[in-house]
Length: 235
Ligand code: BTN
Image (tube, rainbow, N blue to C red; front, side):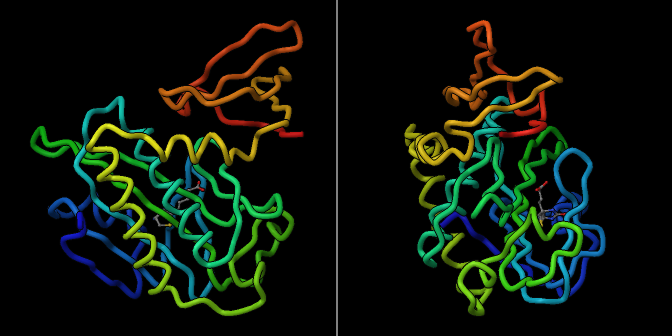
């Protein structure tokens, strides 16, 4: 098992920041009941209330900067499998949001940390577990409890998730990438049109570099990496 240590905090600014600040060994997992400055991708914030939700980060050894996005796909596939084990069918919205009924149930934030030339990857995962009120985001966000009308135990979800991350890490180290196949075949974008930079494209696929492949109305295909674009409207 890649997990060396689990640090459980009741309150922290951000579990990702906590791992960035300290000098932890690879395989350290941090969970928090509350984040005062939870971070999302693209400078957004990650909100959660005082209901029991899963907010965790794990420190992994980097296998090269070009592979950082693969770690995000690995995490997305791990969450996909975990939700499935708890009876929830989700779709993966490139690069690594998990969606249920067109609403977001999980966000993943992958960051790198360079420390004395040792490069590590911090994978932060926020799963909406028992949250019921999303305020302004009511139409855009959901939780496991909302989908199944019952409470879930965050520890059970955490351990299932760590087991699945472990499974895909082992596979990855052996050269397999079934996590990418999971992201491709359960893509939320299949059959959808996407607006990127004000232009409309049809979604085609995800390539082995983790880039999205899209085709414009003139039949020209383009590939974009997760750091190049953010998806605007999706139809
Ligand atoms: C996103 O959807 O934009 C990514 C959200 C990632 C949220 C998780 S919660 C645990 C970890 N700590 C953070 O500050 N962010 C991630």
